[in-house]
Structures are given as C-alpha cells and as structure tokens.
Amino acid sequence: MHPGMEIFQRWAFFERRELLDRMIHHRADRFDFTVGFTRHNPAFITDGPGGLNGSIKGVGYIHKERFLEETLKKMKERITKKPDMFEAAEFLRNEIYDEKKVDFSMLTSLELAKKHTYENVRAGSDITLLYYMPTSTSYEVRCSAEIYEKGPYYEFPNALHDIFHGKRERWSPAYILRMKEIYDNSAEVMGERIYP
Image 1 (tube, rainbow, N blue to C red):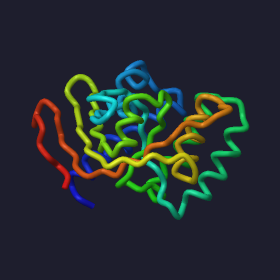
Image 2 (cartoon, one colour; image 1 turned 180 degrees about the horizontal axis):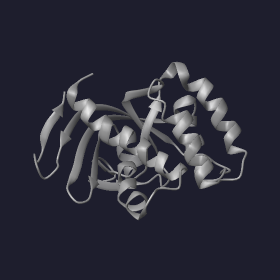
Image 3 (tube, rainbow, N blue to C red; image 1 turned 45 degrees about the horizontal axis):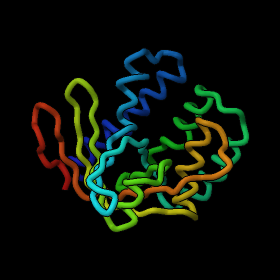
Image 4 (cartoon, helix red, strand yellow; image 1 turned 90 degrees about the vertical axis):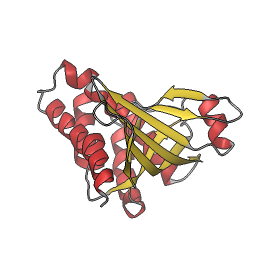
C-alpha cells in the first residue's frame, strides 16, 4: 500500500476503530464523542450548477464488492432491532470495521438534503473532502463521485445509518467516492500531497 494512503487510513479507520473499542468498553471520554468524531464528518466541497458549495456529511469506508452481500444481510437483520448506541458501536466494530473486508480506495456517504452538493455531483463535479480535527490535524481528500439510488452501494450506507438512527421509511441517495489524491493539511506540513 502507498505510504500516504496508509497514513490517512491509520487516522480515518484504525484510530476510529480504537474509539469504537473505548465506547464498547465504556471508556470513551468527552474528547472521543466530540473531537474524535470529526474523523467521520468532513466538509464536502463541490462546484457546479448549485454553486461553489461546502456541506458537512458523515463519511466512512465501504466493503469490497465481494463482501457486500454478506454484510448487507447482517446489516438488514440489525436494522430490525431498536437503536442502541453501544450495541450499534459493537456491530460497527465487529462487522463494518473488519479491515480484511474494507475497500480502502473508496468512501461512502449519504445525501440527506438533495440540494447543492447533489446538484453539483449530478452535473459531474468531483468532491474534495476537507477533514479537520482540532487542534491541528487536517486532511484534504480529492475524489471522483458517483450517486447511487439502487443496488449494494446504495444499500450499504443507508443500512448503516439506520442501525444507529432507526429505520426510515425512505432511503437517501448514496455517494461512492473514489480517492484520487490525499493532502496532509495539518499545521506541521501545510498542504503536502501524500497520495499518490
């Protein structure tokens, strides 16, 4: 694996998995629930017919295609249960954060608002994800973007959302983001490209 991809992966995936472990074992602190969760909520920067736009959205990795059917079956079973933060965290830790199943070249998110970002991506805009974790950690991830409104790439992020927040009557469009470039924007290096 490319060293820069590994740096970002350690921060965005493995350190977040450690946070889940602390949650499950009731050792998470206020920092984990506030600052630690910024690993999940970058700003989406797009440009197009909807105008130059920034929007905060939840983002995570998705499983490799060959594992999606098996994972989705477990996710759909889990949705039928009442949301419980600790049980959901345990499911996420054990089923979703299995690095053998994760495609580390792709991220996924949902479009809950269907406004500027959605309009721009539909018109062909790429997305820049801007992560910031106080006090100085920041990554910029430039991605190509596709919208899915059916199929496993649509179902995975929607099912994951519902495991935590409860089953919705209608699911939202899903984004699949294929990483093209990663920059370390942290104060120590200020915009150094680390991938590719």
